[in-house]
Image (tube, rainbow, N blue to C red; front, side, top):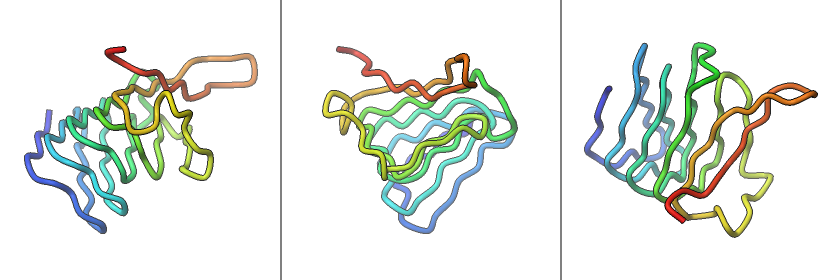
Length: 113
């Protein structure tokens, strides 16, 4: 995994090609974290997180403070225009893809509850 120890500011982008990405600090609005595998953010996630960038539908996004501008797994995405439920917003959560009759959908679940 690629490990980032410093906060990511607006306009910064980190791409973990062919591996997971672990961020030990905040991902600020306007920053992007991209990984071909999983993304772990051990701080608030307020920017964009794109996991499974090369089509890995098993990739997940984990954050201790889920408040993203955009989340995406294997090309399926959700923007902040659709607000997260209060039970998830700003709290520890994970994002994964689940298959459905109308195609894959993002499932956002609280963790550690």
